[in-house]
Each structure stands twice: as C-alpha cells, then as structure tokens.
Length: 224
Image (tube, rainbow, N blue to C red; front, side):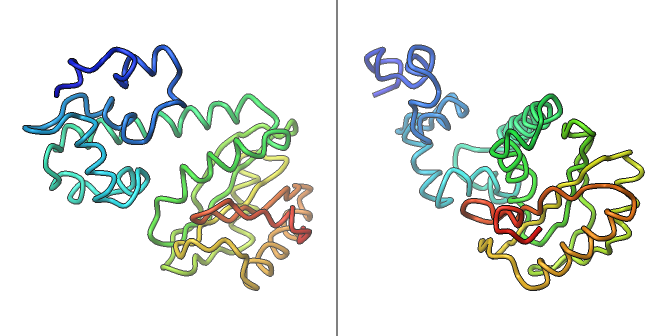
C-alpha cells in the first residue's frame, strides 16, 4: 500500500510536522529524504532495506558515491542531495560553535568534531582555534595520515594558531579502528603541543579523540 493511502497519523511526513523529527525512526527519516519508493516498495520499505544493506544509517551516510549509486532506487542526484544535506549540517554546527563559549557546550564541540572526522578511513589530526571568549575562529585539518597514525609537529600547530590569532586551541583526531582509548603517543604529543603553545601564551584546552562510541577527552581524563 502506498504511503499516501496510510492513515495520516502514520505517515512520516505528517508525523514529523505534528510530533517533531526526533519521534521518527531512522527508516522514516530516510524515507522523507528519498521521497519515493520503487516498484513494490514504499519509501519506508526502501529505506529499511538500505539501512540493513549498509548496516546502519551512518553506514549509508558515509558511503562513497560508487557504493551509494549501485543500490536499487538510488543514483547520482540523490547522492548529491545527501552530500548537500550533510554539509549543511556541518556548517550549522560550526556556526553554532562560533556564537557560543565552547567550554560551556562540550557536547556541541564533540558533535561537530564527529561530523568532521568520523567519516575518514584514515587518521586525521585537526584543530579548533578559539578566541579569548572561547568561540570558534576556525577549524583546520592539519595532517592526513595512515590507518593508525597522522604525524604532526608541534610547531605546525603553533604556526597555525598564531596565523589565526587564536587565544586557545582544542586538538582533535580520529581513530579509524573505532576505539577512543588514547595511546601513549597521543598523550606524549599532547604534552609536547601544550608546552609549545605555552611559549606563545596560547592555552591548550583539550584533545578530543573521535571513534565509534563517545569521544574521549584527555582533559577529562586528567592528562592536561
């Protein structure tokens, strides 16, 4: 039965308007994005199949163009639309951080870093540069590395921080393995960067590690 024949209170679009987007399942949200199904399947049925195929909604959102477009019912136009939606979400999070004290909104910081770093299959080292009010000036990916390491020199972080006229910095990198436990190298690098930044009167506020689960914070662990 087509979704248009469903009772109004069961249709994803109407439920979103009346109850809010948070009340919808992953499949229902994806169905709204897809708009239409395929022969013999509603948009919700197709969405459920796609989520199963990719293992999760995130698996679908992180798929490559080739992986995405070879699925029945999808194509280049949908892939382009999806990338636009994801980029708008990242920019929304970035604008939110620019207008707030990030120290008072640690969850917003982590959600933003997840949106920027979790997608990579290799390790990426990045920095959030902050002003004196701890608002975001800029986000920069400093280095891209291998599956398990991304080499960065403390002087490169200092150079970028001075170039941004930053008063504080939050370091971040991802662990493609999914595990967020800091390695000995992570801890050592953090201390070296902290000391280098102190020489130019820039404060290191945290080092966030992005993985599959909740982010790890070296500051919360007492290693700063």
